[in-house]
Length: 323
Ligand code: TYM
Image (cartoon, rainbow, N blue to C red; front, side):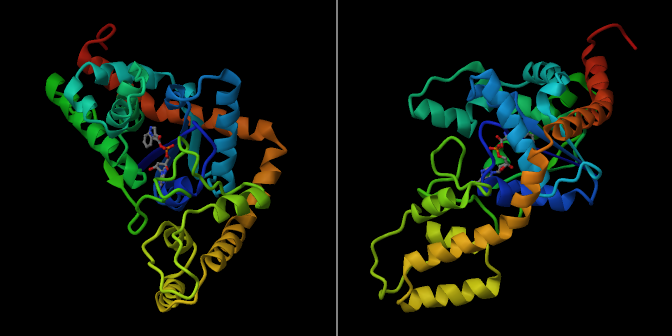
């Protein structure tokens, strides 16, 4: 079984990335041929500074390794070390109807907000399809927010196979973790690198406390019963067992539980959960060349896995001399 997923290096990773994706990536690395990458081509629609792009790739690589990605059991590489995906993007884009891309949520949201949209954002799902299809990936573990992109990748694979009459691309399955939908940010919207609402697992304690104390809550007094389907309780629940959650929710419904107490407990649980990973990250950060070696070795291994699919797509489309 081939497993493929990626994270865009448009910012440092946050607990939405961790619970929605990275935790699954680490768990799955023993269960098949796991390939993970840092999507720096995708970051180009947001980050417009060369040094910042390189810095963010390093940060995301450290986050991944600290969270348990083991280069002996999984491939980790930088997307731009495999420019072949750009060729595949063109090959797929030339069979992708405009209408399909116009239905993309990310594109529609920007248009609705009246923000400028460039071709990179419009073509974003095609590049993502190329990332997936280049390895004939079987499953793609991602958070709920990426589901539409996966459906589009399946559409593009089907369309290419149909147009050229050859089964070049395998249709991937999404793999969305049950029970973890979209992790909310401190303002109640989806936690996202593009909004100022993230909680980063490796922030210094002071910064973490500030972010957690800033989670939106209503003004229900301490003694009154509280609703539990709120941002604060959703975030707290990420760090609790089902029994602990039941107990906490009972206390909330009964009244007498203050939001401050829940926030303090959330901070303690967060520091506890990510403590060992933080220590590992600090160690890894002292040897940046090692991380670069992991990425370079990952790119070599990924290229070998992707080459047959690129060759088959070129052959099917009649690109280059006949083989
Ligand atoms: P990105 O960088 O936005 O997110 C990386 C992973 O984290 C998940 N995620 C979340 N899960 C739950 N709650 C949240 N608030 C939250 N925010 C992010 C995402 O679902 C994702 O799994 N386009 C992709 C990167 C990409 C990719 C690919 C992924 C490029 N090519 C090919 C899979 C396969 C992205 O921007 O993810």
